[in-house]
Image (cartoon, rainbow, N blue to C red; front, side, top):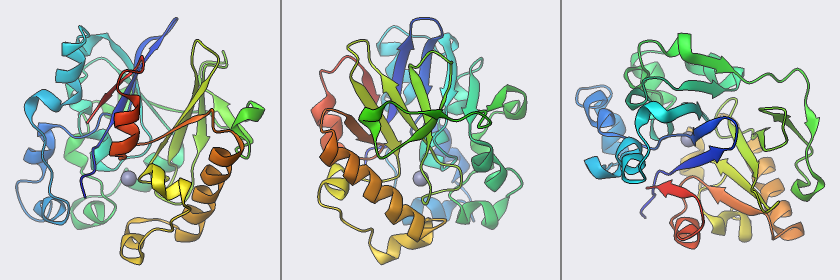
Length: 256
Ligand SMILES: [Zn+2]
């Protein structure tokens, strides 16, 4: 099966160009050129032409890397943070649990968590910023059963939503479009639209990738409930080719 590794480009009226993840980049190939990191590529072969990187795709939209003010990170797996070093001035936003789970990992221990420290810019700690979870807000009822989130800018446009199970501190992003409709970017909480439409549990082999399979299933069930109750909410998994095709032509850009 082909799994595109997508990222989202968001234009916020006050906060400029924001990315949600970056997908892979050619830095990934360098970071996995030697053992033990090479194992990552053997297990999940990756193809990333230069013109498919987040930076190259943004340039084709007329956006220079320096214009990206912020990159919101769903979690620290290499297929989500692979392009960070291409954005020299962006701030990085993430949940504290996600960072704490990987920040001290190196070598095999990092690899087992899908984390490649070489993919982080040298000044990551300086540009990184933790999403405050001190004051959760009630999410718009259209997102039920997801009840609480964190209003990133305090303007009800972007909500960080905790999606437990896949990786510690995984953060989904619910965004209100100018039309008032909601898009819910769910990262790796499910891999394809079929998973939530048909409530397909992950294959046992994939469980070694999860930090908590029971929580993963609970999160997946909530996404399935949301899809049933409110089909007008566009659910966007990070690796779903079908969703990507459905969205081509929508007024947002997704890299593969
Ligand atoms: Zn992941």
